[in-house]
Length: 239
Image (cartoon, rainbow, N blue to C red; front, side):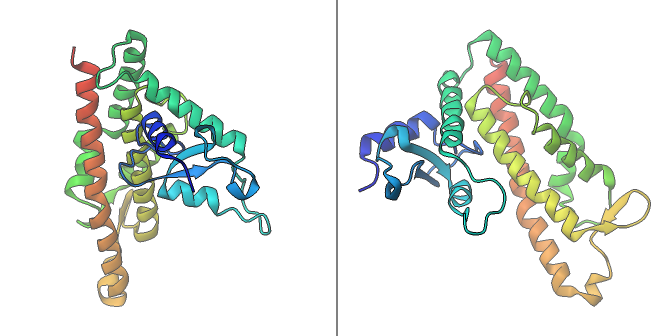
């Protein structure tokens, strides 16, 4: 039968329609996972319900014990991830943060994020150049890498669930962008990278694919960043 209407509604409200693992906002693109599968005796209960984005749901379900690779999510681990996220959503206190301790912590995280991404430099380049406008400084992808490393730190996290969800979405798309840089660009002189010019004659399909990938992803990254910055300014500096 699946989860009943009340369990579904309670779970979606508790998570704020964010994924309980990666924390990005999902909207309608969210699924409710049985932590303990029904075939193993799992119930259609709130306690056994885990809201996930499509990607994380696939990741949780794909582990094959016959050919194990990596570490399988345990039931207790999934519950801890979920409960921690539910608590964050509950503590976010709606559209404006009023708890002064939370406000100060999130301001510090917001200012650190701004310093790492530098909208006048890194984010401006991503929006205007898109990696298809010729050679670019190594510093561009190194700055992306530094941000991704910072995201691994537990203190680099917003208390506010909406801001953390947007930061998580930005992080995921910057990870994809970093992978594209490694895949499609190579050294183009001292401290510079570029899509190889010779691809135009020697590998036109590869060139077209590189341009397509960058052109599709860079506007998404820019939109992620601008949405996060605008919401952060409203939530953290409105008073």
